[in-house]
Length: 231
Ligand SMILES: C[S@@+](CC[C@H](N)C(=O)[O-])C[C@H]1O[C@@H](n2cnc3c(N)ncnc32)[C@H](O)[C@@H]1O
Image (cartoon, rainbow, N blue to C red; front, side, top):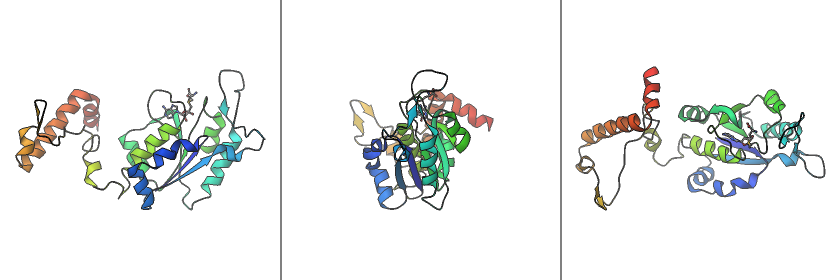
């Protein structure tokens, strides 16, 4: 799967791309990540990418020309045209369903905004899918883009060492939260691992985990249970 990140700050991704799971996926050829700087498509000496909004108002907006021209160049770099995503607080909320949908694509092109965001004609002219990471404002689209990549690559076959781990995580199994998990030591500061997990009865363990999943979902995220009843 290929990601093209279009940004004003490609260097923000330096450390992120070196983190173990993603780095391994890149080295093994399962994932490819390319970064592109809008400023490379500017024509003036100052390499301007932003300007004041018409009609007044605070801040600066990213202008159309560098974004359109950068995007058109990037699209041509691979046979697969890819799906264009704009990271935007006005977009569809990123959740498990959308992550799985995006993981089904072979190429994602990610537009990261900054300042007050994009000139509206970028939405009109390029018709991206707008994706939001939540009802709050971040300083730029780069951290939201990392979040999206981080979640999506977990569904690319071969990226997780153990394919079952994404199947049993929260939200995956029937839309429930994951059951509690424990590792050594068996007792720590008076807190004990539940006996059922130590007794080796796999049927009982599965039953306990299912009950725990349901109980925690009911307690922490009752909305998820309501959603699964609606389906
Ligand atoms: C400071 S924000 C601009 C917010 C814009 N003025 C508004 O009110 O909708 C700059 C950029 O950060 C990114 N961004 C901010 N919040 C986001 C969110 N919740 N989800 C995804 N991207 C976000 C977008 O790319 C946006 O263009």
